[in-house]
Structure formats: structure tokens, C-alpha cells
Image (cartoon, rainbow, N blue to C red; front, top):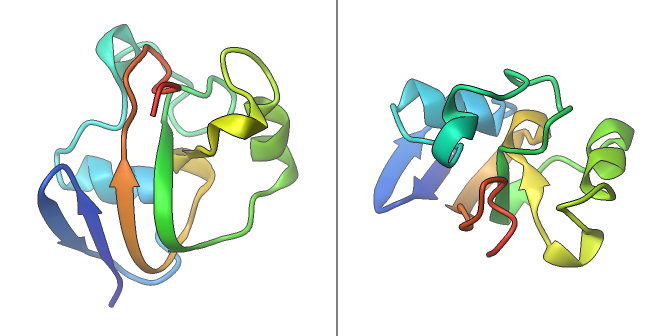
Length: 104
């Protein structure tokens, strides 16, 4: 079972689990500020669940890549959308500051 390391917590999950779901089920915030309420609920549209990931995760899909090209994100920010990222092995996750978590 893969382990997700986030904010000092270790969460075990099934391989292939969606990162956003893993964090939410552990009662860990994947959004900052008002985006905790005002977000797309995992549809990959708002970009507010952006996190930096280090470890084994799924490849980036078209929807995620497209959203990360739009402000306030940019591919050089080196972030992933938690709602579009599947855990494939052990992963360390960092949430950046800023409403969309874009400042890692």
C-alpha cells in the first residue's frame, strides 16, 4: 500500500487512489482560504487543489495540463492538481501558499 506524507501525517491508501480523495478522507485540507468551500469539487476546472508532489503518481492528463497553463498557474510552478493525480506509490505532498496553492 502506498503512503502519502502530508503536513506531518502519513496516510496509507490504495494504489490508484485520487490524491484529493485521500487527503479529504484523512480530514487534511487540500485547499487554502475560501477555496475550501468555493472549488470545483474534483472536476479539474478551478485549479485550487494544486500541490507539489514528489513520488510515484499518474501521468498528467490533458484536462490537468490545460488547467495548469491558465493563470495563476504555469507549468514552471511544478505543481499537480490533487483531484487529477492518482497515487501509484509513496508520495510526499506540499501545499503552497496563495489562494490556489501556486506559491510552493
